[in-house]
Length: 473
Image (cartoon, helix red, strand yellow):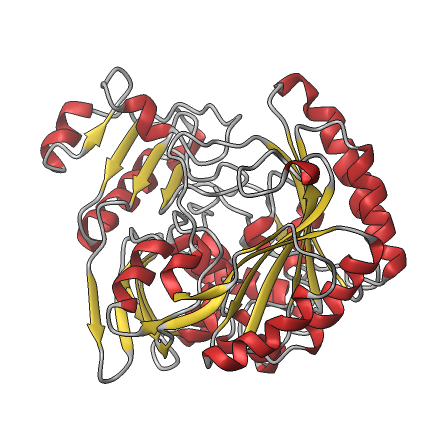
């Protein structure tokens, strides 16, 4: 008999009103590491990275260890309250905070054990990508994460992890040896290729659907000094297509992000560049410095740079400083394409010029290299053969303009669409079920559903890009 899926499966207790929380009891149980409405720090604690998200959780619990995590998971299961897991608070869809539920805040869990000789590390998931990268660099070691230092390693890793070392050392999950996971029944599991291998497969790309990851065991690599930084070029159809062609031809030691946008009046840009189309590229060559200068040379001659900040540097320096009060509001879509030629580049420029947003951008990342050498079925990340990742976005301030900018983004993405219909789960926002399915195409979705049903049959972990458990008729 065929199985069926229910979009929001809940435990029996959730059929009735959730149990009333006793904040005073929770404060005693968790040594005061509890924040509730009315507390002075409440508004700051419920604020996430992206703006336009105004959710008011019933309680925020800042856990100190894995036992705390297990207790909070059990609390959510017993009360039926929605559970949000917060590592760094960078979920584009706002999944790091619940409206009326429980926030399990991992930010106090930052223990790190580095085995320098063995080139491995156990890292708790309250660490950010920047914090962990700085700590590892003291030993000349690194593991690839994303492109923003304040992103928590928890959600970033569970979704895949596309960053500055993706072509040289693969995704974050390609360097994951094991993890500690708290499942929906409160169990604390070590998962790897020998222990719960199905769950280990699922958490490498399947997001937070299967439990709370509290520690990761990473394989590290020797990355001390890189050649990289920012290169700003005039954006024409020729320079955009040329940049992508050079990035595709470059050795895998080079990973680059090309942001095509209209130049804001930044102090390091000459006045004549302000308001003009530019390629703001962030580049990392993880190899010999002399080789790096040679590999970067063709990019510098695509056009006369408006700014050339490429230089040898310690790897953590690539994570630029961030303003604590920066909370962008954006309409955005992520996708993969097979090519960026002159025709596609012209489309990009035309759409960017038509936007009414405060800032419009098309972010282009050439993939391949180490990421593409991992078999598609080896992890839940399905897009090993994708060539180029594109993110289109419109940043704005007036929330009443949301519909306008979302329509522009949708039209822009449709104009760029080619043969690759996939999506990177970490860059999905509050989108449709169809888009989540695009992140996990074909049999990968079916396998993830089976594992979800095994480890979280009531869909306790549902505040995410959700994979629903299967309910037998």
